[in-house]
Image (cartoon, rainbow, N blue to C red; front, side):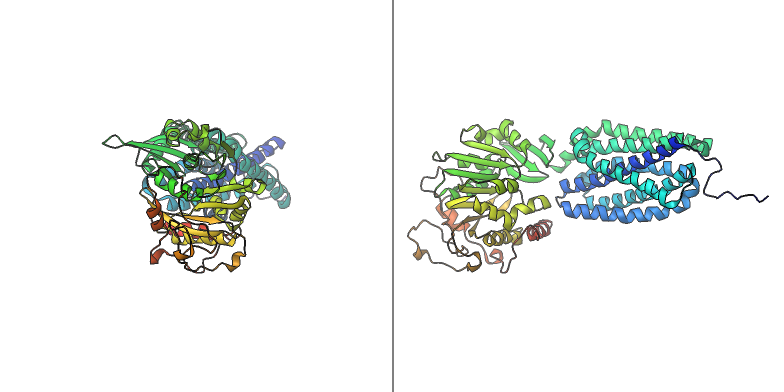
Amino acid sequence: MTETAVEPDVAPSRPRGRLARTAVLVAVFVCAACGLVYELALVALGSYLIGDTVGQASIVLSLMVFAMGVGALAAKPLQRWAAEAFAAIELLLALLGGLSVLLLYAAFAWLSLYTPALITTALVLGVLIGAEIPLLMVLLQRIRRQDAGSAVADLFAADYVGGLVGGLAFPFLLLPLFGQVQGGLVVGMVNAAAGIALVLTVFRRELSKRAVLLLTGTSVLVGGVLVGAYVFADDFEVTARQALYADPVVHAERTPYQEVVLTESVSFNGTHDTRMYLNGDLQFSSMDEYRYHEAMVHPAMAGPRGRVLVLGGGDGLVLREVLRYPDVREATLVELDPAVLELARTDPQVSTLNGHAFDDPRVRTVSEDAFTWLRENRDRFDVVLVDMPDADSTATAKLYSTEFYGLVRHAMADDARVVVQAGSPFFAPNAFWCIESSMRAADLRTVPYSVTVPSFGEWGFHLASAAPGDANSMEIEPRSSMEFADPQAVRSPLASPGAPELRLPQDAPPLRSLDEPTLRAAATFPPDRTRIPGMEPSTLMHPTILQHAQGEWENY
């Protein structure tokens, strides 16, 4: 009688039964869900800290997919000890994946090594995730032999469903309930529990006593580290956040859209400086915000102004300047993040700074994406003020597109004017002039100007009107002030024909930083910062503004 040889990668004692097989598929499901959460957490963190959602997603996903292939190959020699190797990999994956957000936040806050740390973390996590499937396939086959096609189908069905659950759980469950840091730690605990439970129950007979003791001790250690990190996560986040800001943080919250931070400092002479940051980008300083907001609002108010639309500007500071005109009948403010509106209404420092603008009965607020709101809007406004965050992320790039300015144009009444904050013509000249080109492509007639805001540096705006005509026929020609009757109006040589006059209203309220001579100087650009010929407009399908903004600001 011929004796059948036992394959070296299959243990002589095989757990059998439907229950054991179900346990393996449940482990596949849980591991897939956890793995996808780790990927999404890295992408989300990068979008918060860096702002480039597409770039961060591309780096993380491409590196992890590549590393998963490496991990699958690396798992081949481990198949002989599939149970022990799977348990060890899950514990290591749970530890690194659970701590990944915390460690990357620390690298960003203290070491300025975020990108190298992200690349390393994505590669290591990818290798560990890639090693799971081959080992789980071996364990599945040890329960009951079946043809390769059926085994792969069962395994990947559980894997894909797990990915679906993980992908939905991350934004709709983990982030709202736990936040990024603690959410990652919770997933790490689940990952460790699923891996070690499978091996120490279903495949315990394949393990030596020493292996059982070692895996049990390691799982207790990993669980202790994750639980300890969870307990101290809030303190860590406060400390790390404070490391990013020079002044004491007095308010911080992570909303579904962004991180909102308020800082406050007091100088030796008792002057308070309140600052707001969105995703780490300064929005205003109470010391000099009036320079920015006076320059943005008052040139646009030189004309009809009964109905005013403010897009962005949830801090209420643009609104404060608008409401200084008693003949403004209605001011509509569209702000994406309701948390910013709530902060502007209720925080004593911010609400005092904006003059309690939201208590004015003329004000109507809308918590909605400005692009979406404009598509559905049928009202017309005399003045439109676009006070959006800089176009340094995928989410904000659409708000600087020709399509967006086309929607703005349709919201403008006859003789209406629009002002767009356009960043710095000194630090980011390509982005500044790209915004003008995009506005002109939407048939808006523009006149650029800039002012100095100490907190920001030189900062620019584009005032425009929607005069009728063919946008493609707009030639930029110097115009003599003799062509105009109003000697106070500023005639910029960079203005488009048909552009509105850059001037202050005759009934403008007292201003701290702006008068006619200052505004006249604001329309003058030095030769090295004047219009860049042939600048391509930014569109939804070709967001050139994003490339300009990211490429220029990263040098400062």
